[in-house]
Image (cartoon, helix red, strand yellow):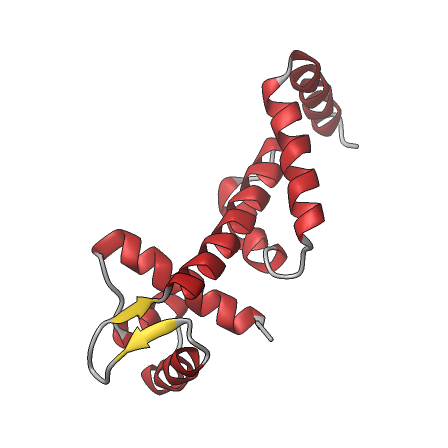
Length: 141
């Protein structure tokens, strides 16, 4: 079973790979704000589950399976950030909230919200609706 914790680790590893080309246990610990020993234990588990390749004191590299899962978490995260900011929520708050919301959502809900967001942001009718909502929000709905 893929837990929130596993998803957070995979997401952090992928982001580090994208930023600097690789991840190390110390980098993951710093990014997630947890201790080195905690990360070491989870890295071992992720390796056993087939999500990463890792040799002690070496680089942590996502397997294809791990990369697919991490990309899915990031997709859900970005969707929530886009959705919340389109509603006028401050980007930093939206990013924090997205970290919580990204985990427990079905693929059907992700696709539906994605289609809705695309409609709202890219169609004239959707833009009008969003504009009306923004006006109402200022009025204190």
